[in-house]
Length: 209
Image (cartoon, rainbow, N blue to C red; front, top):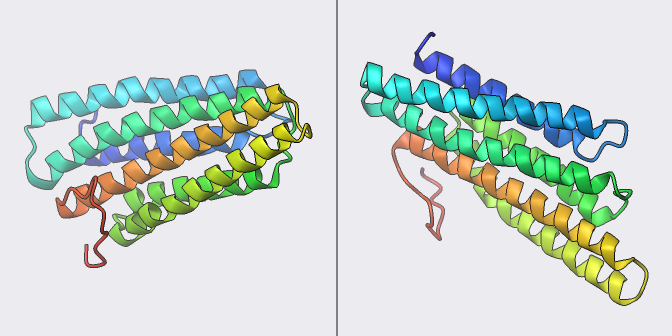
């Protein structure tokens, strides 16, 4: 096994691309559940093997400075990517039971796809500025999630939407919102990786990071 930083980064990027694929599939009616499960299993395989590679890299190579930060960041990013795969599969299971025609949910879906891609691009390109944009963008995701929940509850109350369908809408929306949170976590890890600064739980985002 090629235990190098380049290898670890390459595997992380491959895993990220698989996550993008499963996310794209999650609302597509022409993609079967079996196809989506297959992708989720690929993500799980990456999760196990990438963690193992990182642990071996740290134990055998005894890295320091940025190489050590990279291995630690990849372990954390790996976990967030795996959770995204689980949540995309949850969305797929829900979407097969109804037609995703709620405009607010479709808007949320497009924003989440964008933020995930930007988070991965920030890792690929060592781009702290883009990572910061991902973190700022997360509030848009939260607002859209609230809009979906509000619209769904109103439609159920007015008997325009069956209760069970309403539950599915909200479940999909919450899973999308959580995927946005994981993208934000990745962006925070990129900032830590590139600058050594831990900005988790900070209220004010500095422009000079």
